[in-house]
Length: 370
Image (cartoon, rainbow, N blue to C red):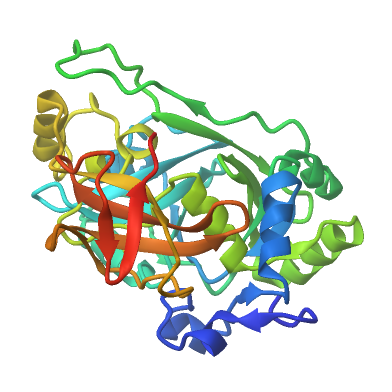
């Protein structure tokens, strides 16, 4: 999609952007993605009110075939995957021994292979961990980024647009409510905490219903054809800037951007979609259980409104958030939103008041009430 007229690549704007394919993937022919196609605000409005097609083919893809894949992934990650069935998708985390988030991936199961797509730049680390934990399990994890690409139909009309490709009737995400502290054993059903329905695409690949629309995991050799079919049916393209603005407004964090090395799942709202609290042992489980039972994670994810008076440039990820001159958190993703103006996700200390007058460098910021 980078060859579409008007496309402006991410790396042409920011050479240090993390939204670029890994070097090994570039060497294998994976190309960069568009930040926008000439009108970022219009592209946002399209995603917010109708549907647009976003190129997210810079994300890493890991394929895990093998007859023991579901049980094996169940033991290694935070999600309940023991009975993962064909046509199911979900989310998972890999945690450190101390419960800090190391990896986040979305899942699609096709009955033969479990597909994991993850942040650009995170594929090598995820695959290395999986390879290290293979032992004698009948699984064969591999980097599939060079032969599979992720596209996303984003917006309220995404399911209708999917009909262009011959797939209809994808169910909306099915989530289990997060239980309160000290819940009873067995209270949570033995299934993924969120289910995203997955259906095969007639031309190869899979469609997965997700909160912001529909993800399309397609063979790279058919990617141009899929894009052409959707555009031919009137689906407009939108760049990554537009997608990020919609994501931030929805308060959906990106691991590695809206998190740091100390972040635990409860701080950034990832317990619900990616952590099963009653599945038994996995790496980092003790911290997850302790924090949930106490009910007070040390920090929390917030949406900030920035005044934009001193500068119209959003702060970079990692910039400190201060209160009365004292650091109380950090900025993650900051964007220009077509309705909300300058907004940002940030992780701040739990005791920061809702009405606090925060500062990010010289920019004033206010917490959006949940």
